[in-house]
Length: 143
Image (cartoon, rainbow, N blue to C red):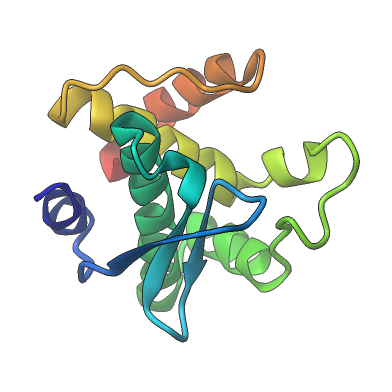
């Protein structure tokens, strides 16, 4: 199962997946220990697996900042503490997209799905893929 393969790659425990009605593509509910995916993707395998990979990467980030004390963990810790999401995003979404934790999650999603699941990933945000590709090259060791 894909969830187990992604969890194994990241060294995290698999989480329950639930489809819910909301405006986001997906969300991680840490206290309840599950990933929620927008119901509109319930029959869209590619979008569903993109959401799963993205949210599992956030789980990895949370563990990373608890285990490591390097420059990356310091940056991620700061962003995780003041995370921008659908409740506090600006009109253009730039404050959300400019977070390293989001770029990292989008990059992991593309890297993992293309290299291990043979699924082509193109971001829906114009121009963002070039940043993702640069990030992957610089962070390949932790992908």
